[in-house]
Length: 160
Image (cartoon, rainbow, N blue to C red; front, side):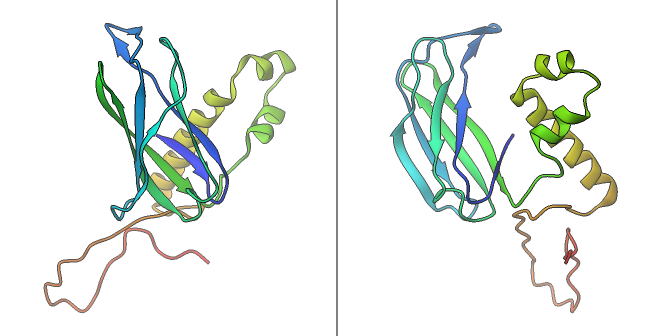
């Protein structure tokens, strides 16, 4: 999963693998759909050549709302892959804050931004699962059946 800060642009990417090796998917198109089914992007061309990851740049308009975006990557030769992008209202810590906490400069330089982002997602999710509350604004949709009860128990209580 990828998390992008609300109201900011961000680059998303996808790789194609066969037997553990990167492969060239050829030309790839991208469709981005909001959680409510609205298409934000339809059949746009992704950037990238050869076996390199294909990328697409989401704009500030794409991330205006808290949301969960489904990204469909279509290759004419290697099939379709799907990824998820969560548009969030904040992070528990920034990349630079984590780098500053690392024990030495050599360690800080050896860790990539992408590795820090993945570790941040893991840490945020683990803390939220344990506390049963989201610590930053997030999109979440709940559906109720209307069985006649007068109380609705929400997954995430409102935090103000």
